[in-house]
Length: 437
Ligand code: SF4
Image (tube, rainbow, N blue to C red; front, side, top):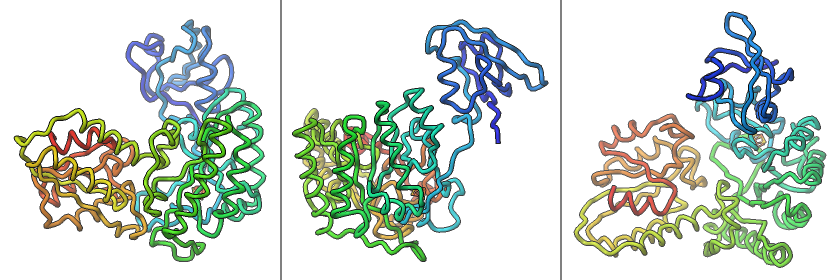
């Protein structure tokens, strides 16, 4: 179904405002060309002289000739940011986390997107299974990038099995086209024990190195297993020994690749280091934290920021306060060590540190971003919380104060009778908030 491009708002002092374009107007075409989505719109409006056809809500059409600087934005925001319908995925991956969510959550949380345009706009990872040749042509024509690809494996048969899609192996050929056209990409492998690890992981890494430098990095993260897996493919959690084995493979490839390409390229998610109980690599190993959003290097970066912040400070015993902080089990050991160090500097600041067990999704889920308000409330009720409870920012859904179960910070504050504040995923803010508030 064709999507109408309706103006939601117009930026103050912009070209659109000057042209009297208003919310509710429809942008019909640019330079006589129909707009498929935001990519077309951005491309077509780049020129210095453009003709925009606007349809007013009363049906009147205005043809606007606009002279502007190259790349100058018209200042229009659309009701649908993508300017097209969102594409959902055509797969049924054996590791899909959405299939492992309990019923009754907010409907939008169940939407399975697999849209290459969102990869470019928001950094989402796509499987390439519903990317048409026309899409590839447009990515190449507009030279978009980086495109984030969920590989899982480079073995075509295994990929079909993991994604439950008979076209999933074939889809990998699009990477060759993107690479030949010089499109930058990043990759991800969700590692499933006994499925795509061991020799299959070695094969994937070896195959993917041929795309360097266009494929800039690949992360390997362990599959998330919630307790809601009835009727799903039987997947086992990684043990400490498994995690050590995974790290051994990745480290040996890093050494090899670094010698040849001066990049580490393949990165293990932070969770593997915790599982293996091995020290985190130094910052240099993360290639500028290129896979940060995938949980690769987040903890190293946090610790280094903390160290930087504390080194700037002088011990001070005059600051007196009592506060609390809560988060996922995964960060507990690291946080304890950092809080001990803080205590050496600020002996009269009492910090209660709580690691919240994930009862909602099950204990195997240890990351902070998947905690719910109900678990936080249940486990902190009756505990000493001091004058303020700090919660990590990544608990919240994007641009909202909602947690996964739709609870708000105000709900938590009411239930626990304590002021609640957010601490950013940043070691500097951690020190600042806990000490100065
Ligand atoms: S691509 Fe796979 S993991 Fe992603 S939403 Fe679809 S089924 Fe789930």
